[in-house]
Image (cartoon, rainbow, N blue to C red; front, side, top):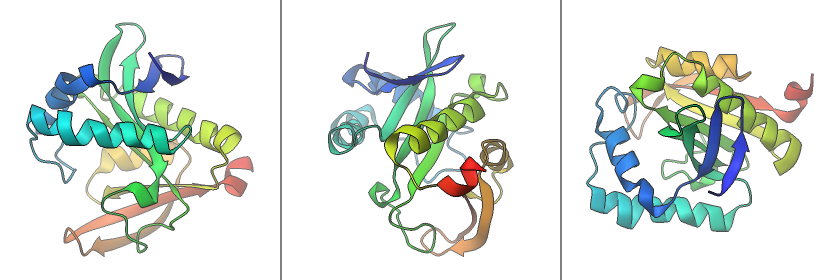
Length: 185
């Protein structure tokens, strides 16, 4: 298991081919993908398109990518975190972030909600980014109606930057960020 980092309760590791069913199950829950642009994706698409994109990020960057999350106590897959250069997002747009920013995101199974896992993993990634990876600014974007995700951003130390209607999806989004200097204060 190629581990990026561990927290008190979580292991963030690289995805592997055997994670197809984990991703399929995660993305099959309409509540989990409610605030995302993702729709139900076939296993074959996960295997031939999505996982290869994840693997390419591991090859392209040291320490950045999309990471499977395993709960330490149960050893169960509970979701993922992304911590990658924002320019690698398919939806990258300079109205949302600067090209040099690092994007933070997360998706967890419903059974893992309200346990502080999203905040725990986010804080650990932000710390790793600033202390080990040379990150200068971390940014996160959410639909304005996604109150739970916004609370995670705030608890993780990110600060509100702007609220706007994102033309590509025709919905209101919020952008939160923290830069290295503010993090050190």
